[in-house]
Amino acid sequence: MIEHLPYWISMLFLLTVCVAIGAFYYANGRSKKLLILIISWSLLQSLLAYQGFYLDTKAVPPRFALVLLPATILMVYGLLPKQRRLILNKHHLYLGTLLHTVRIPVEITLFYLFVYGMVPELMTFEGRNLDILAGITAPVMCILYFRKQVGNTVMIIWNISCLCLVLFILFSGILSAELPFQQFGFEQPNKAINYFPFVLLPAVVVPLVIYTHLIALIKLSGKNTY
Image 1: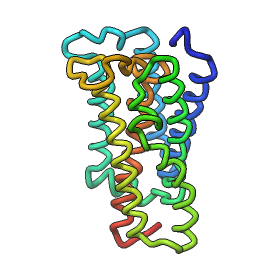
Image 2 (image 1 turned 90 degrees about the horizontal axis):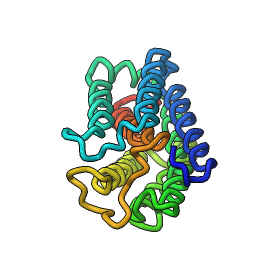
Image 3 (image 1 turned 135 degrees about the vertical axis):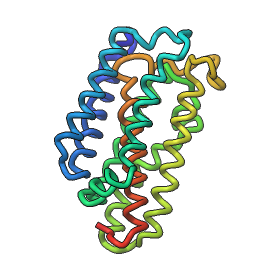
Image 4 (image 1 turned 180 degrees about the vertical axis):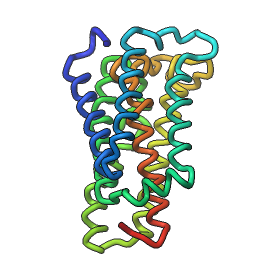
């Protein structure tokens, strides 16, 4: 935990993580195996961060690879034909779209992390991060689509645009962290992701958001809309 940070910021973010996991669970057929996997992964990353494992930013290879690589591998595995079919058959596009509203409290969290010197300004909506727009527009797109006021094409464009937004902030966050390949935020680097609970942003929340966009795009481009 970050000692100088107000308690409510950590609690807000932890609640956001729980909501994201819950929304993902209900949007994808309530798979208990999938839920156990996500919770186990979250607990492992929480434990490592809480014990200060990621605070050694000079380790070679970078310890933060244990956050990024497994999460990436799990996403790729979930997109393989067999796993993808299982998810697509159960995926609820309405709930999947609503999941993206969690990006609003995520952006609020990032803003206050910037205020308390834990992330650079470029990671907030006052900087280069426009990801909050995805969270604000998610319920609107949900209503419009299921009232048939917009079609698949509009939803595809929205998902692609919002996917680009989350990828942009993901790479901005990684490249502004205190890692050997840091490119931004030298005056105020991204330190928060090395601590519990904020390590769960790149470890859990961002992968769930990205995967939800990819599954939605696959489903919207197919024959079945629901």
